[in-house]
Length: 361
Image 1 (spheres, helix red, strand yellow):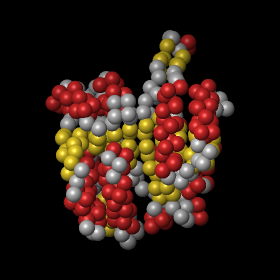
Image 2 (cartoon, one colour):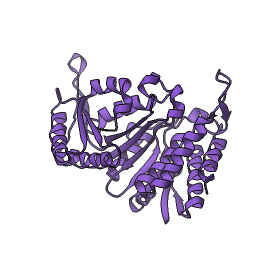
Image 3 (cartoon, helix red, strand yellow):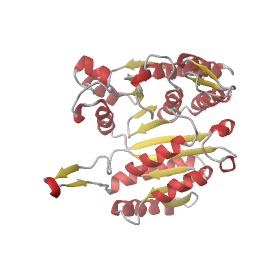
Image 4 (cartoon, one colour):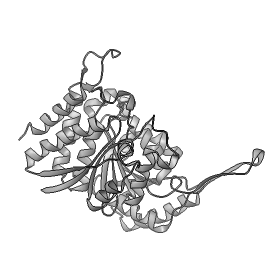
């Protein structure tokens, strides 16, 4: 394979972690004789310093023309801008402009690392492998938000809107994902209260009838958050609208016991943008102590969902968890009592993962 990738490193620790992801991709190139051409563009605070815009036209145009985007993080605690101009708004805008309606978040607790998970060992004896499929471009987060009135007469409204097409297309995609995995899908909603959730269930039920070989569950968000702790290993694909998907992604993401290990793939009809779910962590930028694993895993997601290179993506996943299982961590060990852990620099973690990928060449 010989192809292009748009590279957006972003702000804070973005350049450091994305550089480690690129090391993993270079190892894949060598092992499988691929060639990925990285074309770098600015976004966030780094873009604002040059263009006075956090999402320059040149960056957006490049993303529209290239299917695959490897993304870092954006954010600035010092850039004093209106809400509509802040770096995080640029992230929302690019999702909307590219219509990245599907957000995939893989949640994995590797058996080799189960002793560090926050769940009881009997709940995760065989590990956990969940794929959260979250609708990303509609719902409460995208609807109109208003505060009106004066004094004691003030009131607020938030619009939560979904139409048939918005639900249908991601439900279709979620069933496709379930068919590639263990053929089980759980819809998470609040259909006992919300009209939007009732519509989600109607459409979900239609797909369930069309796919009788796939096991389906329907679960309210409050129940789902409890069951995720009690029986996480029983979940396969979790489908949810935007807000509930955000909630359950965050809960599931912390269960592994690792901070900074969850990647995402935001996918539309024509584009696939992959990156880590954590923030820009500007306070530790440039110190060579940030955990780059989520960014490295996001490179694997790009290979899997953007290029359909499943073996290559599996190599990256296995390399990451193998390095972690050997006790390597990015950061400083001064406050850690576990003598089995080996703390090294961000760049060393990237080198170790790349070496693991190449071991079986």
